[in-house]
Length: 74
Image (tube, rainbow, N blue to C red; front, side, top):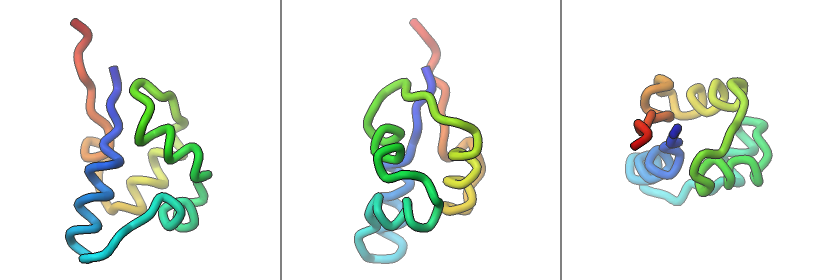
């Protein structure tokens, strides 16, 4: 299964900037619909396009490995 670490990256940015970072703010900055961001953050196994992954990596200034994690099937 693929796990998105969006919530962790949001929490890290909030800590660094010492303020709340909302999904609406990320949506405005990335052009990704807020509902899509919510699905990425909250629905295990959600399937999103590589363009969204690229936009999120650019927003968080991170590599794909920080945003996406592979969880081996049991």
